Length: 637
Image 1 (cartoon, rainbow, N blue to C red):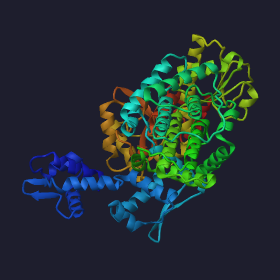
Image 2: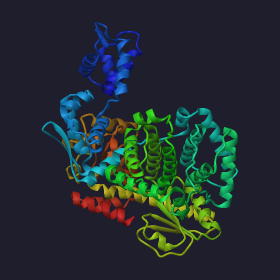
Image 3: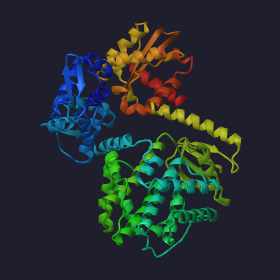
Image 4: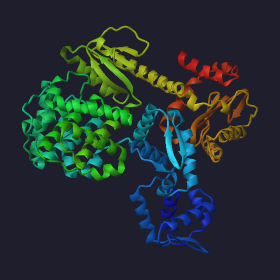
């Protein structure tokens, strides 16, 4: 069932009289003929008619229609081009399935011609991944190098990840809501009495781990297989966790043994002001060499198969702790039930597939059974890590260099997290400059003198971080963010710009006619559909897209077949409302690039934010000159 057909059913279900086809067509923004086709297709999906026709119009079968909607939701059938494209890629590259084009069309409830058009469109949409989608002997194939295929899989995995994989509301839906509220209150009260920082993501991560542990102990599945206990937190932090443990035991009426208390200490360390790249020998001793070796081996396989890197301390520390507990339970033939199993399988199928992939390998390496419920807990760890990585995409990769004397390193780290946690992804804290040389980062915040390096920005701060230094860092972060957006244009220039959509001598001086002319070129090249021109005008009439002497018109919808920026340069200038512009950058944005559109937009504006630049623009005659111009301006600024 198509998305528009579902909208049609919902609309008719709320009507108490027959509705003319013209009204339905206007409501769904389609033609009357399309409405009639939708209705014919819907009536074929059910044994009984779904929509009745009369002289007055169309009315709904209130018995059959809801059943059809329920069936459609249960089957979870892709409803639009993007969903179908992702579905095809996952089937071939993740599930290693052979897809017959006719069987697939039937499975997706679309025609052969629609599916063939989707395949053709996918070659434009995913061109940047250097893969090709072809139909050979009625089977769909994806051609390209393995590394490019993995890059494509990785993109889809992150694209399907929501901004909030797990939040408190989801925890309350899947665990005992009273437990979630009670534990939340305990953690917040404890943290409010301390100087430690706990961001929203870390808070939910800590909640999740503690809820699993509480549920395990409550059901008689305590940890009993370790032979050691060694808390390795700093004394003040250890006291804080000890207080947290006592409150959990008191409020939940539980008795935790030493191993479980130790696990809470480590979970706390992994989420609250955990400094990356600390000495982890104690942690390795607690978890065990065999488990860590198994985790390392499996993560290599995950990277090779799915193109995602889970080998970060934010994942390996809490996951290894969880695996240690899982190993303990498995040796006792005792397993946890997971209340989120069904929702994880339905809402996050790729994450769950990765969890099953890891479970099968870990089961073989460690010689233990791993149930479906336990695999779902592994999926929670994977989802939490991918959510964290997705949030960090737009953050600046940062390293802190500071001596450990009197815990200065931790104090600086806490300050940076508290003040710039939304801007910086702090990947390491080191006491020696030599330790940073093998790391990949963009910003070095240091209390020590260091040599300058063109590969990254250096900001010197004193151990006593001042207000003046805070403003300096704010300014540097703003500059780096803008430069990062400009680099997106450089790295994707050939993806976003096309010589066929470049003109250095615009003759049309009337805005709407010029837009129409540029839109027609995009349409001829196969980058947009026929509605694109009207969508661009709709956006332009709402608010002018002219800034200084540049205009960046674009559609109100991100429905381009491939992200493309059409370039037009005018020597005499074009009247654009109450401005005169000399360059027009018509942006056709594909839905897959929607998250980057703001960055692209701001970068383009910043590049042309100098009055003298338009004299240089007038000298540009060829597409290659334009390429050199863009590269030159980004390097200069």
